[in-house]
Image 1 (cartoon, chains in turn green, yellow, cyan):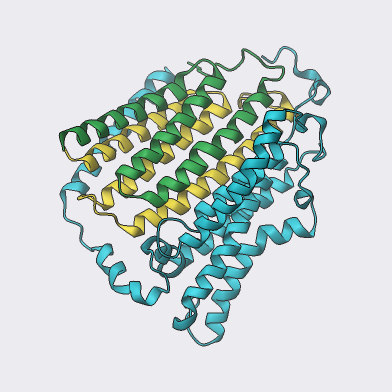
Image 2 (cartoon, rainbow over the protein chains, first blue to last red; image 1 turned 60 degrees about the horizontal axis):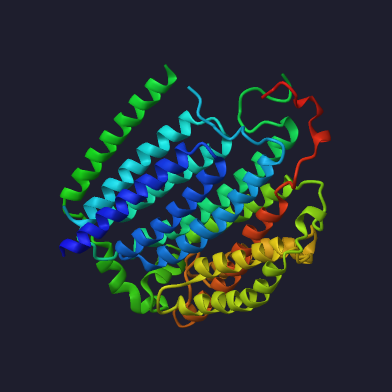
Length: 90
Length: 100
Length: 231
């Protein structure tokens, strides 16, 4: 019981951390990779919430397809735009 | 603290995080990711709040399932628009346009 | 200044949302949807509650959802870039990817069919199957396989609207028979759900691959000659 709660806690903390990294990472490529990791962790979270159907869809869509689409876009934007990835404004 | 409470809390925090990220970043791709994070938080809230004892409830789960597919289609459409915008203006943010 | 304002707004949003969520969690649920679903399960035609909710009890939502997907697909197509499908940049000569494709594509197709079939009595269904099928198409596209059906034409249009059309047809048939809109005849429910799901799978995959394929390819310098000085 205790270990399960610890696992949940670990999962939630890593969810929040990957989300934060996806938003804060200077490098756009790294941000997208973090976002893909976030998608995979979401799939795990769905399993913990007794929702295997959503977990299946999230693993295929959230982590797989979204990642491909975003990475494709990153390489597209990068082509002659390297270094302009940092998106933080004040 | 029960697991469901933990995930509901995570959903709330992800919503806040996505909201701040959406408004604070200027790169369109980052805005899109922030928006998706906010959406994920909403999905967690929707499922978590409906099953306080963690017994699965098919109705919100089915809604979230359709929600995920729609979110992905919207993301893909947003990327198409973004790339078109980049073609037209050479920019990856929304400050100014081809007209000015 | 903007940073501060947004941070304050985000914190306020989080606190209010958290407080609301906490109160909702503390209250007992007024209506137990689980029991309602469990009671109606024998009439639904399938054995998996989520599939029953998606395609029978709340099929109106699913109908609108596939409608939204079709609209997204059409909007994407209208943004179609001028680059041809067989742009040299899209063709890859990566031997590893080519070799993997030969293994993965049949496997993914079988997986997709399994997920579709499994949806009637366990986890799985049209959405997951459509996602896997869409991923297969994206993989093929990345491998440079010319996907002729993605060209603007009859095949693409048919593929996009198939799911919505079949769903709507079944819905209207119910109305014509004198039932309510979207009500399935009891003895046909299971079969109709499988047919709708198969069409939905194809359409969902088509929308996803289509949206991936129409994304404008690499920009060239002449697309925006006046770009200097903007960054």
